[in-house]
Length: 423
Ligand code: ADP
Ligand code: MG
Image 1 (cartoon, protein in one colour):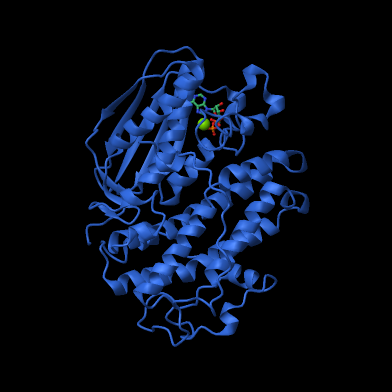
Image 2: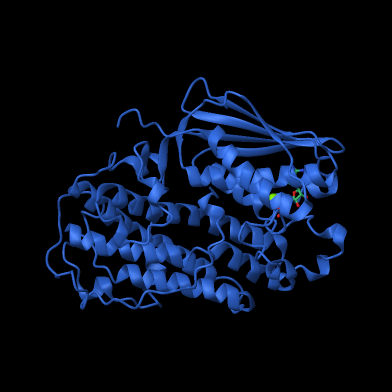
């Protein structure tokens, strides 16, 4: 069971054809529902103006709208699936309203990069993906869906959008690497940090509706639900597992990372879980999988490269006062040199390949067998720590690191759970 986030699934940028709201088969243009909920104050009828997409003005004004900070409580507010039709429609309309604002912000941010960077083919392909996604979602009338048939269309459209953006991170990473002589690491990190943090929320918002749909309707086969089928599970509310057991995720990530470690070095370090392995808490499994995979890759790599045979110790503790956990991942892999320590949170900073003298061919890592950038190599992108921290902090958690150079490294991960008691 390879964690979903790190599956190498290189999707072609198969873009949905332009769907005009005026020839959309299932949508009759008429007064939309006004039963409250998100967007209830907006005009009830989708007019030509609402739907027209003029790249010059609309993106900017959409991007200037207030960004609703997504909270775990937002994700569960429509209730526990299977949702009644009205709640499912509300969730869809909430997503229809919020996504264009988020996509527009990404487009504006990309457009504000120096021209030489935006014109890099990788970065411009991401830019075009965002524009295409925005156009696609705007093609769906505002204040819709109002029927379950429309909701299915909407969810299909959403699924295509999510898939289109599957490869955003490695593509951007490659683009920025190719542009590194035109920019500074600080500029890149500032841009990427904001971009990738907002992307976490945008993606989650779309995935949450898709997961709620799958868990609430009997039509999962109509969608390409390969990635989402195991979200249809009793303890899940959409993407949130209300009984997530970190020890289980550690085991599956360690087995995956052990495989890639063995592939590269011929050995796999052992792990030992202590503390309270039975702890469960409500959280988003894919986020925890991402973080743990990256932290274990770092710990395994350090262990093997330093020649240590000491296992990686993972201590799990439940917060005694509120929903949440902390974890310490301890390796005896020699620690981090002081001159590197200040850089480890920068995107693209890596010490990988240095000893093999391959640093000149830094782009080569994207061409390696596994593609390098899809998460299936042990290290090399330099995105592991900063992006893991972005995931941890997204819902109020934290990721910190203590190192004893010459001995080893402790990484502390703290996560707040969502309070689902009321549901
Ligand atoms: P990458 O693993 O792709 O190099 P990361 O962001 O995960 O990128 O880590 C950045 C750098 O921090 C690594 O290249 C390594 O030098 C250092 N590092 C991170 N974790 C550890 C660790 N547990 N032990 C030793 N060095 C580490
Ligand atoms: Mg790493």
